Length: 526
Image 1 (cartoon, helix red, strand yellow):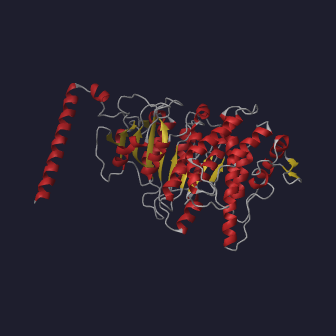
Image 2: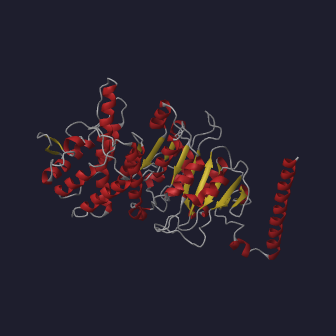
Image 3: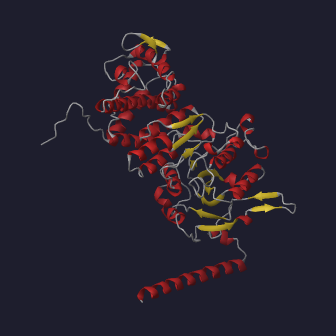
């Protein structure tokens, strides 16, 4: 017999239904002449969904507070709650709706005059340590509604009202759909040196840095929040108690983003993944004098893909040491990241650790780039460089990219390289055939070995082979752009004598491994 649905239950929305609903909403927005492509449509859909999400969450909190005999203070009050102006499908529409949303002062849904919706949301201020209002005000600070037709807006609102944010299953389904929407932002971002990181690369970097509950994870250039959302999911698996949840919600995730649209998208992304009040700073993370950063500013884990190819103004460059000032954004972020990592001690043996996406130019750059890399090698342990195949960021940039992994445990003695091979039969990735997380499987296993071994894809280089000085001790170069010595291309260019020696060395190593296996089998059979 079918279960009878109570009045408080909402019908479950499947992934297919959610996808269809969102598509329908975007189709409606395409009819509005005030919106210019997805650069306008996606933000509009995002903030409308944000308000529905917020109201559903506040209803849950109100219910819980009532059961516990507590008074609940909502972040958004009547008549600005979703239930007040949006939930009624026959509610305000047309010019009346546009005026209520856009104007600083308007007739509100209850018939009284007061602040318009966006003006009210921008004016919110938090009290008693509750950050929710500050988050909402910052999210809406740069929001402008470009929709002209209040009738089409009402149609979009009615569709979004069909999403139920009081079911964890539906929230997770929507989070996955939302991530697919964020991927569409890459086309617009490519012009400014920002290339949103493919999720498999993010998953790999989070897996091998392995953040632990109680540690603070930072992305100082968080974009739409991909690294932070994945780190949150990783930490959430470790939660066993109420105190664990409190630690995760209040102390674990931090970010920074300078542009209004990615900032808003990162807030929504993290909220959908379950972070109640994302601690994302709105502004340029480089706008701080890095020599004045202290222990209170440092964190345990930094995961980021900072913008590269961009240029910073003189005021930002002046925040950095005189001999390491540059307009290249990626090199400035690299310095910030180094200064932001926690020092050894105070419960951390190796200090903070980082995983950073960098372009090839960072590896072979001279001048300021070489001096920054020298500092990294002398004061940090750059233990691993993962060289990504061509086209990982295609079609948004053809620039080859690398993943740097370093910590604050001491100076670098040797650098391990791992060259991730391209899929068989393919020279490049593409938008339709992107990289998959499964392609990192062997690299993850190798990365986590207590005693790493050289393979066809992995090799190590003493730091003295990288840092080159002249007779007076002045730095000449610091080239990290080292090719795989085991690759077919490298072997083709070896002198015959060296090629023969290389083959003999591999044969001797194979014989040694076979002898070790034979000895182990003999020991087992005793």
